[in-house]
Length: 443
Image (tube, rainbow, N blue to C red; front, top):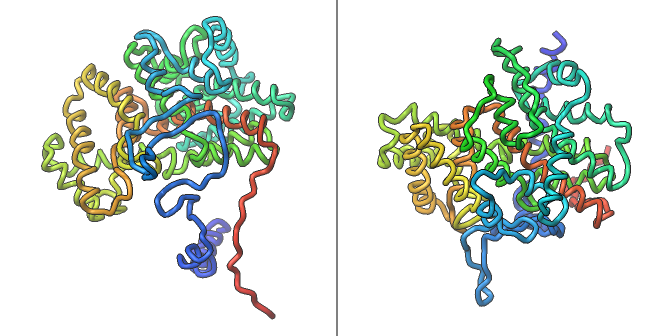
Protein backbone atom coordinates (compact mmCIF):
# COMPACT_ATOMS: atom_id res chain seq x y z
CA UNK A 1 0.00 0.00 0.00
CA UNK A 2 2.85 2.38 0.87
CA UNK A 3 4.45 1.99 -2.55
CA UNK A 4 1.15 2.58 -4.32
CA UNK A 5 0.57 5.73 -2.26
CA UNK A 6 4.02 7.07 -3.12
CA UNK A 7 3.45 6.40 -6.83
CA UNK A 8 0.09 8.15 -6.77
CA UNK A 9 1.54 11.10 -4.85
CA UNK A 10 4.47 11.46 -7.27
CA UNK A 11 2.14 11.36 -10.27
CA UNK A 12 -0.09 14.02 -8.71
CA UNK A 13 2.88 16.31 -7.99
CA UNK A 14 4.36 16.03 -11.50
CA UNK A 15 2.36 18.97 -12.99
CA UNK A 16 3.52 21.16 -10.10
CA UNK A 17 7.17 20.39 -10.87
CA UNK A 18 6.63 21.03 -14.58
CA UNK A 19 5.00 24.40 -13.81
CA UNK A 20 7.64 25.61 -11.37
CA UNK A 21 10.72 24.17 -13.06
CA UNK A 22 10.06 25.31 -16.63
CA UNK A 23 12.38 28.12 -17.78
CA UNK A 24 11.36 30.04 -20.94
CA UNK A 25 13.65 29.65 -23.94
CA UNK A 26 13.87 33.46 -24.21
CA UNK A 27 15.79 33.64 -20.91
CA UNK A 28 18.50 31.30 -22.23
CA UNK A 29 18.93 33.67 -25.16
CA UNK A 30 18.78 36.80 -23.00
CA UNK A 31 21.59 35.64 -20.71
CA UNK A 32 23.64 33.97 -23.45
CA UNK A 33 23.38 30.52 -21.91
CA UNK A 34 24.41 27.71 -24.25
CA UNK A 35 22.09 24.80 -23.57
CA UNK A 36 23.96 21.55 -23.22
CA UNK A 37 27.18 23.62 -23.27
CA UNK A 38 26.87 23.87 -27.06
CA UNK A 39 26.41 27.09 -29.02
CA UNK A 40 23.81 27.69 -31.75
CA UNK A 41 26.14 26.08 -34.31
CA UNK A 42 26.55 22.96 -32.19
CA UNK A 43 30.12 23.79 -31.14
CA UNK A 44 31.00 22.83 -27.58
CA UNK A 45 31.76 25.57 -25.07
CA UNK A 46 35.47 25.42 -24.21
CA UNK A 47 35.74 24.16 -20.62
CA UNK A 48 39.17 22.56 -20.45
CA UNK A 49 42.43 21.52 -22.11
CA UNK A 50 43.68 17.98 -22.76
CA UNK A 51 46.65 16.13 -24.24
CA UNK A 52 44.77 12.86 -24.52
CA UNK A 53 42.73 12.99 -27.71
CA UNK A 54 41.47 15.26 -30.46
CA UNK A 55 38.49 15.24 -32.81
CA UNK A 56 38.72 16.99 -36.19
CA UNK A 57 35.51 17.73 -38.09
CA UNK A 58 36.12 21.21 -39.52
CA UNK A 59 38.97 23.04 -41.24
CA UNK A 60 39.59 26.77 -41.22
CA UNK A 61 40.30 28.01 -44.75
CA UNK A 62 40.89 31.73 -45.23
CA UNK A 63 39.07 32.52 -42.01
CA UNK A 64 36.09 30.39 -43.03
CA UNK A 65 35.06 27.28 -41.11
CA UNK A 66 34.43 24.38 -43.48
CA UNK A 67 33.26 20.81 -42.71
CA UNK A 68 35.82 18.11 -43.47
CA UNK A 69 36.26 14.36 -43.23
CA UNK A 70 36.33 13.37 -39.56
CA UNK A 71 39.51 12.40 -37.76
CA UNK A 72 40.13 10.99 -34.29
CA UNK A 73 43.55 11.32 -32.69
CA UNK A 74 44.91 9.52 -29.62
CA UNK A 75 47.95 11.16 -27.96
CA UNK A 76 49.04 12.72 -31.28
CA UNK A 77 48.43 9.62 -33.43
CA UNK A 78 45.59 9.29 -35.92
CA UNK A 79 43.53 6.32 -34.71
CA UNK A 80 43.31 5.02 -38.28
CA UNK A 81 47.11 4.84 -38.43
CA UNK A 82 47.23 3.09 -35.06
CA UNK A 83 44.79 0.41 -36.24
CA UNK A 84 46.42 0.08 -39.68
CA UNK A 85 49.73 -0.41 -37.88
CA UNK A 86 48.51 -3.52 -36.07
CA UNK A 87 49.58 -6.86 -37.49
CA UNK A 88 46.89 -9.20 -38.92
CA UNK A 89 47.06 -11.41 -35.80
CA UNK A 90 47.80 -8.60 -33.33
CA UNK A 91 45.25 -7.34 -30.82
CA UNK A 92 45.62 -3.65 -30.05
CA UNK A 93 43.48 -2.96 -26.98
CA UNK A 94 46.34 -3.38 -24.54
CA UNK A 95 48.88 -1.38 -26.59
CA UNK A 96 46.55 1.56 -27.16
CA UNK A 97 45.41 1.47 -23.53
CA UNK A 98 49.05 1.99 -22.57
CA UNK A 99 49.27 4.89 -25.03
CA UNK A 100 46.21 6.65 -23.62
CA UNK A 101 47.13 6.08 -19.99
CA UNK A 102 50.81 7.00 -20.13
CA UNK A 103 51.14 9.17 -23.25
CA UNK A 104 53.61 7.13 -25.33
CA UNK A 105 53.44 3.98 -27.41
CA UNK A 106 55.07 1.14 -25.46
CA UNK A 107 58.19 -0.71 -26.49
CA UNK A 108 57.89 -4.48 -26.80
CA UNK A 109 59.24 -4.86 -23.26
CA UNK A 110 56.90 -2.19 -21.85
CA UNK A 111 53.92 -3.75 -23.59
CA UNK A 112 54.78 -7.22 -22.29
CA UNK A 113 55.07 -5.86 -18.75
CA UNK A 114 51.80 -3.90 -19.00
CA UNK A 115 49.94 -6.85 -20.52
CA UNK A 116 51.24 -9.05 -17.72
CA UNK A 117 49.99 -6.59 -15.10
CA UNK A 118 46.54 -6.49 -16.75
CA UNK A 119 46.46 -10.30 -16.78
CA UNK A 120 47.42 -10.49 -13.12
CA UNK A 121 44.57 -8.08 -12.29
CA UNK A 122 41.90 -10.16 -14.06
CA UNK A 123 40.60 -11.53 -10.81
CA UNK A 124 37.93 -10.54 -8.34
CA UNK A 125 38.00 -10.76 -4.53
CA UNK A 126 37.10 -14.14 -3.02
CA UNK A 127 33.37 -14.88 -3.38
CA UNK A 128 32.76 -11.44 -4.98
CA UNK A 129 30.96 -13.00 -7.95
CA UNK A 130 28.64 -14.95 -5.65
CA UNK A 131 28.10 -12.37 -2.93
CA UNK A 132 27.86 -9.19 -5.03
CA UNK A 133 27.29 -9.86 -8.74
CA UNK A 134 24.83 -12.72 -8.33
CA UNK A 135 22.88 -10.99 -5.58
CA UNK A 136 19.83 -9.06 -6.84
CA UNK A 137 20.78 -9.45 -10.54
CA UNK A 138 19.45 -6.81 -12.88
CA UNK A 139 18.57 -6.67 -16.57
CA UNK A 140 20.33 -3.31 -16.50
CA UNK A 141 23.91 -4.58 -16.48
CA UNK A 142 25.21 -1.02 -16.20
CA UNK A 143 23.50 -0.72 -12.82
CA UNK A 144 25.00 -4.05 -11.82
CA UNK A 145 28.48 -2.86 -12.85
CA UNK A 146 28.08 0.43 -10.97
CA UNK A 147 27.11 -1.42 -7.81
CA UNK A 148 30.08 -3.77 -8.24
CA UNK A 149 32.53 -0.90 -8.73
CA UNK A 150 31.35 0.86 -5.57
CA UNK A 151 31.51 -2.41 -3.64
CA UNK A 152 35.07 -3.07 -4.84
CA UNK A 153 36.07 0.02 -2.85
CA UNK A 154 35.24 -1.96 0.31
CA UNK A 155 37.91 -4.51 -0.64
CA UNK A 156 40.60 -1.86 -1.20
CA UNK A 157 42.68 -1.10 1.89
CA UNK A 158 43.74 2.23 0.40
CA UNK A 159 40.73 3.81 -1.31
CA UNK A 160 42.26 7.29 -1.17
CA UNK A 161 45.88 8.04 -1.86
CA UNK A 162 48.40 9.61 -4.20
CA UNK A 163 48.56 9.61 -8.01
CA UNK A 164 50.23 6.19 -8.10
CA UNK A 165 47.39 4.76 -6.07
CA UNK A 166 44.81 6.10 -8.54
CA UNK A 167 46.79 4.62 -11.45
CA UNK A 168 46.79 1.25 -9.66
CA UNK A 169 43.03 1.41 -9.17
CA UNK A 170 42.39 2.41 -12.78
CA UNK A 171 44.49 -0.49 -14.10
CA UNK A 172 42.65 -2.94 -11.85
CA UNK A 173 39.24 -1.66 -12.98
CA UNK A 174 40.24 -1.83 -16.66
CA UNK A 175 41.10 -5.50 -16.09
CA UNK A 176 38.00 -6.24 -14.01
CA UNK A 177 35.36 -4.54 -16.16
CA UNK A 178 34.91 -7.46 -18.62
CA UNK A 179 34.21 -9.81 -15.69
CA UNK A 180 31.80 -7.38 -14.01
CA UNK A 181 29.86 -7.04 -17.27
CA UNK A 182 29.81 -10.65 -18.48
CA UNK A 183 29.23 -12.22 -15.07
CA UNK A 184 26.50 -9.66 -14.42
CA UNK A 185 24.79 -10.73 -17.63
CA UNK A 186 25.09 -14.43 -16.84
CA UNK A 187 23.56 -13.88 -13.40
CA UNK A 188 20.64 -11.96 -14.89
CA UNK A 189 20.17 -14.51 -17.69
CA UNK A 190 20.06 -17.36 -15.17
CA UNK A 191 17.91 -15.91 -12.42
CA UNK A 192 15.57 -13.79 -14.55
CA UNK A 193 15.42 -15.77 -17.84
CA UNK A 194 15.83 -19.23 -16.29
CA UNK A 195 18.75 -20.06 -18.59
CA UNK A 196 21.87 -22.05 -17.77
CA UNK A 197 24.64 -20.17 -16.00
CA UNK A 198 28.35 -20.69 -16.51
CA UNK A 199 31.19 -18.62 -15.09
CA UNK A 200 34.39 -19.01 -17.11
CA UNK A 201 37.54 -17.55 -15.65
CA UNK A 202 39.63 -15.38 -18.00
CA UNK A 203 42.71 -16.92 -19.57
CA UNK A 204 45.86 -14.93 -18.64
CA UNK A 205 47.38 -15.68 -22.04
CA UNK A 206 44.53 -14.13 -24.05
CA UNK A 207 43.75 -10.56 -25.02
CA UNK A 208 40.87 -8.54 -23.57
CA UNK A 209 38.72 -9.11 -26.67
CA UNK A 210 39.39 -12.85 -26.70
CA UNK A 211 38.59 -13.15 -23.00
CA UNK A 212 35.27 -11.34 -23.42
CA UNK A 213 34.15 -13.87 -26.03
CA UNK A 214 35.61 -16.77 -24.03
CA UNK A 215 33.73 -15.75 -20.87
CA UNK A 216 30.50 -15.01 -22.69
CA UNK A 217 30.12 -18.22 -24.72
CA UNK A 218 29.24 -21.57 -23.18
CA UNK A 219 31.89 -23.39 -25.24
CA UNK A 220 34.56 -20.68 -24.86
CA UNK A 221 35.14 -20.75 -28.63
CA UNK A 222 35.54 -17.90 -31.15
CA UNK A 223 37.22 -17.25 -34.49
CA UNK A 224 40.22 -14.99 -35.02
CA UNK A 225 38.09 -12.61 -37.11
CA UNK A 226 35.47 -12.37 -34.36
CA UNK A 227 38.06 -11.49 -31.73
CA UNK A 228 39.83 -9.07 -34.08
CA UNK A 229 36.59 -7.26 -34.93
CA UNK A 230 35.70 -6.91 -31.24
CA UNK A 231 39.22 -5.68 -30.47
CA UNK A 232 38.86 -2.94 -33.12
CA UNK A 233 35.44 -1.94 -31.73
CA UNK A 234 36.95 -1.60 -28.24
CA UNK A 235 39.78 0.58 -29.55
CA UNK A 236 37.36 2.87 -31.40
CA UNK A 237 35.14 3.28 -28.32
CA UNK A 238 38.08 3.77 -25.96
CA UNK A 239 38.29 7.56 -26.02
CA UNK A 240 36.54 10.48 -27.70
CA UNK A 241 37.76 13.83 -26.43
CA UNK A 242 37.19 15.41 -23.05
CA UNK A 243 33.79 16.85 -23.87
CA UNK A 244 31.59 13.76 -24.09
CA UNK A 245 29.20 13.47 -21.17
CA UNK A 246 30.75 10.57 -19.27
CA UNK A 247 34.33 11.83 -19.65
CA UNK A 248 33.29 15.30 -18.51
CA UNK A 249 31.58 13.60 -15.55
CA UNK A 250 34.87 11.83 -14.79
CA UNK A 251 36.73 15.12 -14.71
CA UNK A 252 34.06 16.91 -12.66
CA UNK A 253 33.99 14.22 -9.97
CA UNK A 254 37.78 13.88 -9.97
CA UNK A 255 38.13 17.64 -9.51
CA UNK A 256 36.14 17.42 -6.27
CA UNK A 257 38.82 15.15 -4.78
CA UNK A 258 36.65 12.04 -4.87
CA UNK A 259 38.15 8.54 -5.09
CA UNK A 260 38.59 6.43 -8.22
CA UNK A 261 35.69 4.07 -7.49
CA UNK A 262 33.17 6.87 -6.97
CA UNK A 263 34.47 8.65 -10.07
CA UNK A 264 34.15 5.63 -12.34
CA UNK A 265 30.71 4.80 -10.89
CA UNK A 266 29.59 8.32 -11.81
CA UNK A 267 30.96 7.89 -15.33
CA UNK A 268 29.07 4.61 -15.69
CA UNK A 269 25.87 6.32 -14.61
CA UNK A 270 26.40 8.96 -17.27
CA UNK A 271 27.26 6.52 -20.05
CA UNK A 272 24.16 4.37 -19.55
CA UNK A 273 21.85 7.16 -20.69
CA UNK A 274 20.17 6.57 -24.08
CA UNK A 275 21.47 9.95 -25.29
CA UNK A 276 25.03 8.71 -24.74
CA UNK A 277 26.09 5.07 -24.55
CA UNK A 278 22.72 3.50 -25.29
CA UNK A 279 22.42 4.86 -28.84
CA UNK A 280 23.30 1.61 -30.65
CA UNK A 281 20.41 -0.14 -28.90
CA UNK A 282 18.04 2.38 -30.48
CA UNK A 283 19.59 1.57 -33.85
CA UNK A 284 18.94 -2.14 -33.38
CA UNK A 285 15.35 -1.51 -32.28
CA UNK A 286 14.83 0.68 -35.36
CA UNK A 287 16.30 -2.04 -37.61
CA UNK A 288 13.94 -4.63 -36.15
CA UNK A 289 10.98 -2.31 -36.72
CA UNK A 290 12.11 -1.83 -40.33
CA UNK A 291 12.27 -5.58 -40.86
CA UNK A 292 8.82 -6.01 -39.34
CA UNK A 293 7.28 -3.46 -41.68
CA UNK A 294 8.98 -4.03 -45.06
CA UNK A 295 8.36 -6.93 -47.39
CA UNK A 296 11.92 -6.65 -48.77
CA UNK A 297 14.33 -4.83 -46.50
CA UNK A 298 17.11 -5.08 -49.12
CA UNK A 299 15.12 -2.86 -51.50
CA UNK A 300 16.48 0.74 -51.37
CA UNK A 301 13.11 2.15 -52.45
CA UNK A 302 11.22 0.53 -49.58
CA UNK A 303 13.98 1.52 -47.17
CA UNK A 304 13.79 5.14 -48.33
CA UNK A 305 10.01 5.26 -47.81
CA UNK A 306 10.40 3.83 -44.30
CA UNK A 307 13.04 6.44 -43.44
CA UNK A 308 10.75 9.21 -44.73
CA UNK A 309 8.05 7.98 -42.35
CA UNK A 310 10.54 8.11 -39.47
CA UNK A 311 11.42 11.71 -40.30
CA UNK A 312 7.70 12.56 -40.42
CA UNK A 313 7.31 10.91 -36.97
CA UNK A 314 4.99 8.30 -38.48
CA UNK A 315 7.18 5.23 -37.82
CA UNK A 316 9.19 3.51 -35.10
CA UNK A 317 9.26 5.62 -31.90
CA UNK A 318 7.76 8.77 -33.48
CA UNK A 319 10.78 10.85 -32.43
CA UNK A 320 11.59 11.90 -35.99
CA UNK A 321 15.16 10.62 -35.53
CA UNK A 322 16.97 8.17 -37.78
CA UNK A 323 19.26 6.52 -35.25
CA UNK A 324 22.85 5.92 -36.28
CA UNK A 325 22.87 9.07 -38.41
CA UNK A 326 24.54 12.36 -37.54
CA UNK A 327 26.83 13.30 -34.69
CA UNK A 328 27.23 16.23 -32.31
CA UNK A 329 30.78 16.83 -33.52
CA UNK A 330 31.47 15.07 -36.83
CA UNK A 331 30.17 16.58 -40.04
CA UNK A 332 31.05 14.83 -43.31
CA UNK A 333 32.10 11.50 -41.79
CA UNK A 334 32.72 9.65 -38.53
CA UNK A 335 36.16 7.98 -38.87
CA UNK A 336 35.21 5.32 -36.33
CA UNK A 337 32.25 4.24 -38.47
CA UNK A 338 34.43 3.99 -41.57
CA UNK A 339 36.99 1.80 -39.82
CA UNK A 340 34.45 -0.42 -38.06
CA UNK A 341 32.38 -0.88 -41.23
CA UNK A 342 35.23 -2.71 -42.98
CA UNK A 343 35.37 -5.32 -40.20
CA UNK A 344 31.57 -5.58 -40.09
CA UNK A 345 31.62 -6.30 -43.84
CA UNK A 346 34.11 -9.15 -43.38
CA UNK A 347 32.19 -10.65 -40.48
CA UNK A 348 28.80 -10.37 -42.22
CA UNK A 349 30.19 -12.19 -45.26
CA UNK A 350 31.75 -14.90 -43.05
CA UNK A 351 28.38 -15.47 -41.36
CA UNK A 352 26.24 -15.28 -44.52
CA UNK A 353 24.38 -12.12 -43.46
CA UNK A 354 24.43 -10.54 -46.94
CA UNK A 355 20.83 -9.25 -46.85
CA UNK A 356 21.41 -7.47 -43.55
CA UNK A 357 24.59 -5.91 -44.92
CA UNK A 358 22.69 -4.63 -47.96
CA UNK A 359 20.03 -3.13 -45.69
CA UNK A 360 22.61 -1.23 -43.62
CA UNK A 361 24.30 0.07 -46.75
CA UNK A 362 20.96 1.30 -48.06
CA UNK A 363 20.28 3.15 -44.81
CA UNK A 364 23.75 4.70 -44.84
CA UNK A 365 23.22 5.91 -48.44
CA UNK A 366 19.59 7.06 -48.28
CA UNK A 367 19.35 8.64 -44.80
CA UNK A 368 21.77 11.57 -45.30
CA UNK A 369 19.99 12.63 -48.50
CA UNK A 370 16.57 12.56 -46.83
CA UNK A 371 17.74 14.37 -43.68
CA UNK A 372 19.44 17.12 -45.70
CA UNK A 373 16.35 17.54 -47.84
CA UNK A 374 13.86 17.69 -44.95
CA UNK A 375 15.78 19.61 -42.29
CA UNK A 376 18.14 22.60 -42.12
CA UNK A 377 21.64 21.25 -41.49
CA UNK A 378 24.40 23.59 -40.30
CA UNK A 379 26.98 20.88 -41.00
CA UNK A 380 27.09 17.62 -42.91
CA UNK A 381 25.24 14.55 -41.75
CA UNK A 382 26.63 11.04 -42.09
CA UNK A 383 26.48 7.63 -40.47
CA UNK A 384 28.04 7.44 -37.00
CA UNK A 385 29.65 4.46 -35.29
CA UNK A 386 26.37 3.45 -33.63
CA UNK A 387 24.90 2.44 -37.01
CA UNK A 388 27.31 -0.48 -37.27
CA UNK A 389 28.41 -1.24 -33.69
CA UNK A 390 25.09 -2.85 -32.78
CA UNK A 391 25.20 -4.90 -36.00
CA UNK A 392 28.73 -6.03 -35.12
CA UNK A 393 27.65 -7.16 -31.66
CA UNK A 394 24.68 -8.95 -33.22
CA UNK A 395 27.04 -10.75 -35.62
CA UNK A 396 29.10 -11.80 -32.60
CA UNK A 397 26.01 -13.17 -30.86
CA UNK A 398 26.36 -10.67 -28.02
CA UNK A 399 23.03 -10.04 -26.24
CA UNK A 400 21.64 -6.50 -26.35
CA UNK A 401 21.90 -6.17 -22.58
CA UNK A 402 25.70 -6.06 -23.02
CA UNK A 403 25.88 -3.42 -25.77
CA UNK A 404 26.35 -0.43 -23.45
CA UNK A 405 28.52 -2.40 -20.98
CA UNK A 406 30.87 -3.18 -23.89
CA UNK A 407 31.10 0.55 -24.48
CA UNK A 408 32.05 0.95 -20.81
CA UNK A 409 34.67 -1.83 -21.02
CA UNK A 410 36.38 0.26 -23.70
CA UNK A 411 35.71 3.77 -22.42
CA UNK A 412 37.06 3.16 -18.92
CA UNK A 413 40.50 3.49 -20.50
CA UNK A 414 39.67 7.03 -21.63
CA UNK A 415 38.04 7.84 -18.29
CA UNK A 416 41.16 6.66 -16.50
CA UNK A 417 43.43 8.75 -18.73
CA UNK A 418 41.33 11.86 -18.09
CA UNK A 419 41.22 11.18 -14.34
CA UNK A 420 45.01 10.94 -14.29
CA UNK A 421 45.39 14.14 -16.34
CA UNK A 422 42.94 15.98 -14.07
CA UNK A 423 44.90 14.87 -11.00
CA UNK A 424 48.26 15.86 -12.51
CA UNK A 425 47.59 19.32 -13.88
CA UNK A 426 44.24 20.82 -12.86
CA UNK A 427 43.98 20.79 -9.04
CA UNK A 428 40.89 23.01 -9.05
CA UNK A 429 37.27 22.01 -8.57
CA UNK A 430 35.07 22.35 -11.66
CA UNK A 431 32.24 24.67 -10.70
CA UNK A 432 30.39 26.33 -13.62
CA UNK A 433 28.03 29.23 -13.00
CA UNK A 434 24.24 29.06 -13.07
CA UNK A 435 22.25 32.28 -13.35
CA UNK A 436 19.24 32.32 -11.05
CA UNK A 437 16.04 33.48 -12.76
CA UNK A 438 13.92 32.79 -9.68
CA UNK A 439 11.24 35.34 -8.95
CA UNK A 440 11.22 36.60 -5.39
CA UNK A 441 8.11 35.99 -3.32
CA UNK A 442 7.11 37.35 0.06
CA UNK A 443 4.85 35.96 2.76
